[in-house]
Length: 192
Image 1 (cartoon, helix red, strand yellow):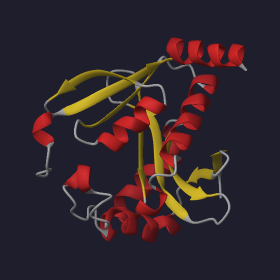
Image 2 (cartoon, one colour; image 1 turned 135 degrees about the vertical axis):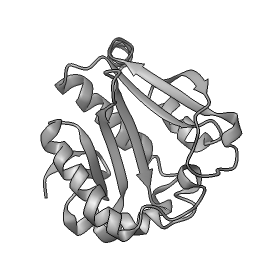
Image 3 (tube, helix red, strand yellow; image 1 turned 90 degrees about the vertical axis):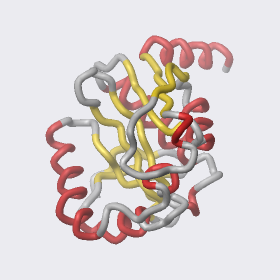
Image 4 (tube, helix red, strand yellow; image 1 turned 45 degrees about the vertical axis):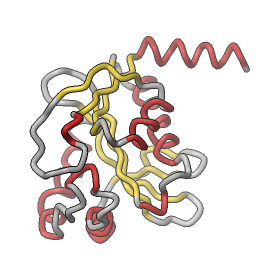
């Protein structure tokens, strides 16, 4: 198991082919997929095995230090979901994302994992901006982004491949710059 980082409660590691069942189960939960596919189970087992996992494995080599990682409960080893921090196409920003099992919701784990990835990215890589997108109606994810220090920069319309309740309110983009992150870290250090 190649660990990317550890937090107080999470082990964030590289995916392996053995994660097929974990990903299929995660993507089969209608509540987990509510703001992604409108609740449909997607992608299926064949696509997870033949496309998704190989894509993640190749990305580790293509973009060292970035990718999509499995998240486990450090105490139990239970699969909780995934986090990603990876280059966006074209604009040079680094995209933050996560998807967690319902059993992990409401425990601060999305924030904990995201904050750790953000800190690792800004301290170990020469990047200037981290961004995240979600549907405007996805208030739980928006709260996580706020807690991680990202700020709302725009709301826009984007055609979605699935009908999703509330999608008529658009997609929101959040960002955090290196300078803003560093200022917050410095302020917190002075206050402690």
